[in-house]
Length: 372
Image (cartoon, rainbow, N blue to C red; front, side, top):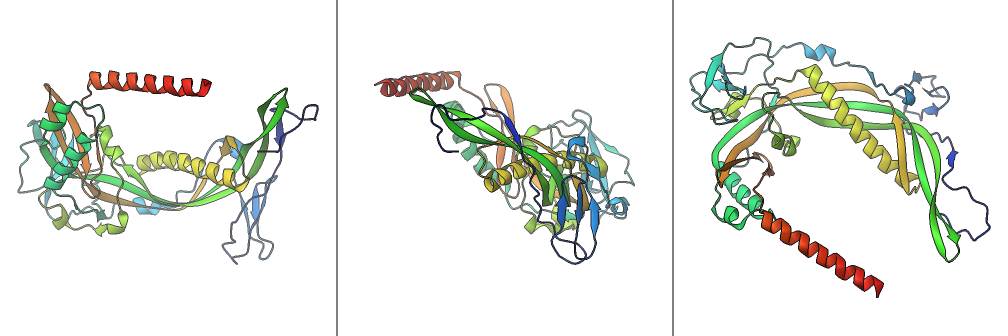
């Protein structure tokens, strides 16, 4: 925050001050020297070897895609290692993969017995890796009980009596994407200062515009690759430690079912780009605020160019289960590797009302103390 200004001093309040700053730490891919960014021409050039590169306009709002993983889209791998069959649920549409000798009596997603075999799809890629189960069914049950007990507004009766039922361990499909990103940007940063008005000070903000290039390597952007299972709790627990990823082996999924992907590679990349774009803006915002000691970050316009895009198709472990309370069924999920739990729990209206009353009383006491 700027220094205090005395009455009568000249100042501009809430007036945008435009300042262009060249910011880049890009290294030349040819010689390794620092590359200079020109914000007027949106080019990056190396003074040592002559390397140049044109960048997209941040105002355009469109991302330039260089999908150099096109060749990887060829579905070379289709063999799951052992003979498999696909089972589809008539009730929820869930599609799972079983060993040919297994039979499906219950859908792992909704508990329905309305399941039927479907023809094998020769264009479906086999997974390239597996995140093995580390959490047993017993351990998942313990984590559920701990999770439910931690719910502040859950009825005491539910915490004492509810037990997890219909536990199903399933390997769900995920795409992960790696990419180098280069993002020209224009960002508005706000710097606060105080102006004295009589006996009080008012906070004003001076805005300045900065431009530059932000680069970040995105490692393993995860995209849940299923349209069939619309359980929102799955996305909430889909954080995995990929350092423990194993090459696909049918032995890992022995005894479990595995859902095949219904979100294709291209559609998965569209989703990944949206997630990456939000992540880049958040990270750039934090970086600029630290770098320029700004008090606020306003609008950020950026366009992103993606290079060296690679992907993996993985199976990762999830426990699906539910519990019943007062005649209502509540679904929840447990990450089969980390034990993270997500779901919806019953709510006691009485507990909510008590919490609101306590909050009102506390606020009243604090206001009374401040007035005194």
